[in-house]
Length: 418
Image (cartoon, one colour):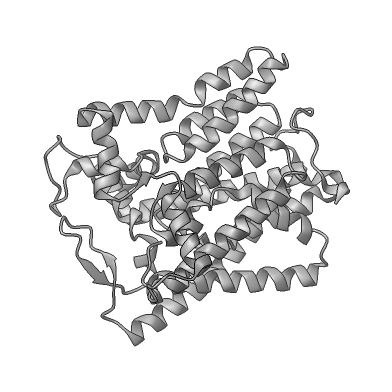
């Protein structure tokens, strides 16, 4: 594997995206990404239709009311705008809402919307003022554009890590492999996965090419998208600190260190002031949505139940086992990534793992929460880059079908959270 070991992160900055070769390569990566995702979504749609015919009254999704009543599904779009997506659609449609204590049309207190970081619905909201554009359509469009931006950035990351010999091929495959990750359905739904991944990809590419102002700006913006942006903020800040100590690139690394945490600090300050204190903000996450930092207790409980064989919840066991296998695979890929990629990519992936497993959430969301930790996918991308085109097409096709199956099975048949 020595011929695919990455160059250090402090190499000469790469050419701009406007260069014809990079532009063509990014366009090919986007096309391949879209093709793979279309296959997966088609499989998901078929599975959803089949599940509905067999059990049309099966209750799968909460209806978004104050009583949190569950309802049955009707189509693939129920999954694309379910769970967190229902909240983002609310915010895109009517904003963060009225004064504290007021409720919306569903009887849900507006203050609960503050638990959801605003960047994604803010980008969708202006589109809702266009004729015929619903909040759902606006959110799905933002996800679509963000996914395309992420695919283009993934190509550049793969090209950078793959080197001169295989860089172009690694970049294309990296975008395709991200498209077939187990929870890839969320890339096309009303979720923040595509947006945050796009920001992370381009921020880390800026770090690798020593564009410190861009890296700091994108990391700062990511802080408005989701709390796990702390992983990207920390990575960019650490890389900038290393550059500053090495006396490289003048004042720019210092600026990146200041810009990176700005968005996260700004939103947490805004939400805390509006609610009357930071603890009241964290209470919303804990008491209403069950999300809290528990030092990995919830994740370890799931892992130990499976390893010790004491899990008595038969209904939940398949998804627990699948989640455990995804987590184990992620850790293996992270270990294999260390000698193969610039250290900022490994640090970011490791930080995402810590934040995802250290927080108490439903175990079926593990794949979704790790979706933006794209650097681990460099390992299969580097390996697949050696495969013949015919073999590569078969592998990616099989993975697209499997990803589509999981996307349909998880919400419609298992009834678990996305």
